[in-house]
Length: 408
Figure 1 (cartoon, helix red, strand yellow):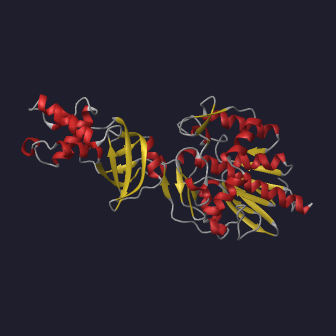
Figure 2 (cartoon, helix red, strand yellow):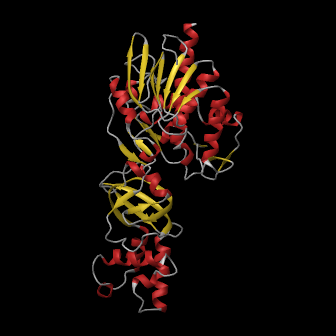
Figure 3 (tube, one colour):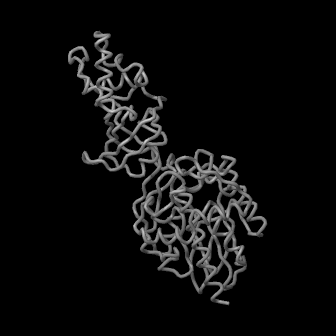
């Protein structure tokens, strides 16, 4: 990258989804671009997304699926480059995509690495200069130029895009360093929390369930009131719960909330109570755990019976079929925390949208753009976070392209 005040040069820091997409859009428009990536290859985290299957977007895309300080900005970004524009772009790069029954969009190969390969190939075709294993250690602005310092040297450009990723999944190189770069330019960073992550819970009534998976309806309660509900897999662990439904509900969860699990969502409480009563009439000596055999997983039945007894011997309390059915369908677990950033898929919080324009340009330093997970926008589980990464990168690129065209 030449050290000159050229109006058509940009540095993109971060070779993830947002950084690669941004660099490609710039290069395709004739803007000189340098892509800096700290890892030994591009798209390391992208290649692992969606359990390695690559859930890149969702048929039901919309700003209502995001947590952010500015829904208006989120709406603007998604309208400018949404799911249709993303899929058209990736198809033009040679990809094919399929949508599942829940609206999640995947590459037809069901391999996330396929999307990374498409972007890498297009970067090569467009002649984008990529420098791997170059960790950025600082950045500044003076005299109309950004100066970016890495462990190997320094580079200058007219525009700078911070696409470094958040603090989640540190083993992919996302250690939160991008927030410090933003702060160096005068930006603030809201409180950061892990999201789309396993939840830690009270263990008393779920000991013995490690490794058990069940299709449940999961409700999140706060102060006894329902915040949200999800249906899907719940996987019990030695620290609490994991699984698809838990990841999705974790975006809403806080320490002190309660998870309310319905182990038999396909049956009404009265129907279950009647079935338990009829079974007890046939086998009057069966304790609650054995009454539940054939209805729920036997290990779950034992834990529900323990929850039902609440520390008492079941032989001392008899069997109230309505209450036992209620316990099956309203099994409560207090949330004590999460498994943390190292296991999270995304970071909640970041640079406030109020400090950025709708094009994601800094209101503090002209020509600086902050995109992807560095912003205080995070989505629900289901392809929403990758869509935000792609959309924000594209919107920043479009703004830079307009600036370059105006300068000429």
